[in-house]
Length: 386
Image 1 (spheres, one colour):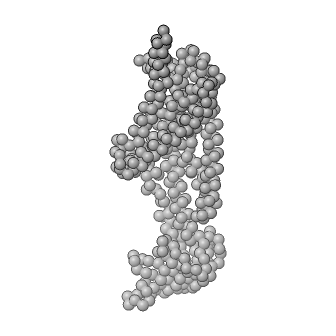
Image 2 (image 1 turned 45 degrees about the vertical axis):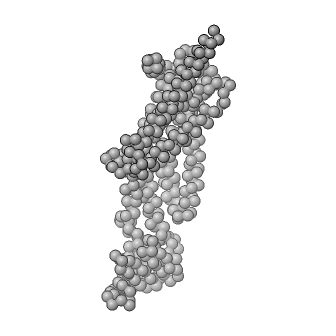
């Protein structure tokens, strides 16, 4: 009953100068921590994407969009950690400057701090919910499109002369004696071309005096325009072989329609409505994961207030250290629960929710230990002394 009354009192005091002062400090520290972590993550993303561009031949024009998509994907996690650490630092600063001592003397304790933080926590939670349910799935779809496009196009980016090359996992074997135009983005000209393909398991050999690589601007499909050549359906030694002479023949090597839909069927890029009505364990896990991220920062805000409570004799940064450890354990537990849900080891009803309940229970026990249990022990000692 007393706990409920304290929360009601804190709610009525939420517009006071003290409460607004606490919120302002939390906002400032959240922005500062978010900026620092974002710069570190951004630098790491730049290095990783440059390495991937060198390894997989990703064009420089696609580097900035891919880095941006990765940063947007990581914003919910970065923002959650930033706000959690900001709450710890804000409360810790109040105790170190003896401001919290004055507030405690006025009857304002941890419960009041928890309520005062909610005008900061709730908007951030809603923003993270918007990111995880709408923005992040869209960025993952766009990233998949770029990666799929580069995976397909990079195979034919550089056709080498006088060397047999395999494309599409061996479905196409290509050879040319001479290539003009080494730039993969240019329409390369080739001479004395040999192409081996499979059509429903039937081998097709194509010979041409000249060929040119080009991309259809409407369908985004890539073709080899073969000129003055012959096509053999079946090997020349077979009795049922077919021979076709042609002046010009377009051979498709990249399907633009397939490429543009890359990754759209993955659960990570599906909409919330599709995930909600799906019985696939992976879709259920993705749905609960998106809701878990904003819920986790709401739960961690209570823990942040408790960890921020320090004394002059206590360690200066122990709260932050314990906070980082708790954040890592919390997120790893959610990842483990997500993996178990995807594999069908736990039911959708249990899902990821047990991790949140466990963390909330831990916070409640920590609160009881810090307040009521310590008070009870103190009273017992006083009675014995008397």
